[in-house]
Image 1 (cartoon, rainbow, N blue to C red):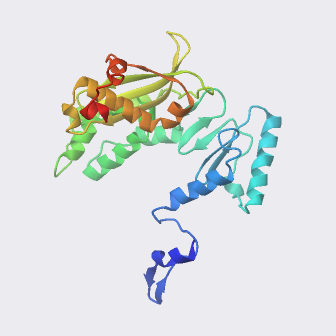
Image 2 (cartoon, rainbow, N blue to C red):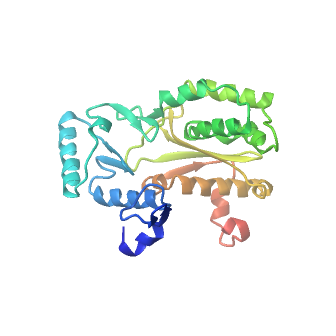
Image 3 (cartoon, one colour):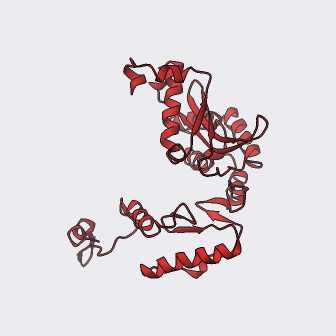
Length: 289
C-alpha cells in the first residue's frame, strides 16, 4: 500500500490507532485493485490459455502436451512475481471444475449450473419471513444467466418482498418457485462461441421487464444459448413506448455483454423496426440517448 494512503485505513484498538501497511480484504477497492494486478501479471496469457478472476485461475488446453506447456508458462509468471499457490486448493488435469460458483466444462459442453447450487435451491423450504424470502431470491438471482425471461418468472417474489410488514408469500410465489425448481433440474448448458463467430440475439419486452438471449445459430432447428439477460423496468421505464423499451433492452444487453459485442458480429432479432429508427439522422430525446 502506498505510504501516503496507509493512514486512510486507520482503525481503533484499545492500544491506540493502527493502520494497514498492505491491502487487506474489506476495503472498498480491494477487489478491483487485485483484479487489475492479476490482469497485468497474466496479460500475455489471458484469453488465450488462461482466465483469471481475482484469485481464481483457470488454465485451459486442448491436449495433454499443450496443458503441460501452458502450466509451465503460468508457473513461470508466478515465480517471476513471487506469488504462491495453496496446494490444497489446486486441481490439475481435470475436464471440469467449479469456477465462480458454476461448473465449467473444459470440453465443448460449455458452462452449466453446479449441482451444489441446484441442491441448495431444491432443498430450500418455502420462506416464513421476509429475510428468508430475500435469501431465497438471492440464490435464484445467481442463476439468472441460465433462465430465459428470469425477471418475469421471479416477479411474484419481488412483489412479495416489497410488501410492508410480514411476508406476503402467496400461491403465485409458490407456483413460480415450483416452476423454477423444475427448470433448474434440467437447465440449458451455456455455449462458448468460437473466435469472431457471428452471434444472434433475441430482444423481448413485457409490461414490467426486458429480456435478452444471446445464442449461437447452427441452423433453424439448432440454437445454443450463450447468456440470458433480464431486468425489471423502473416505474418511469414502464411508460416508455414499445420501440423505446426495445432500444433500452438493446442498450442494457450491450452493457452487460460488452465483451461479446467487442469481439463478435451480433445480429439483433426483434419485432420492432430498430434498425430504421436508429439510423434516422434526426433522432431526438430518449431515443438519441
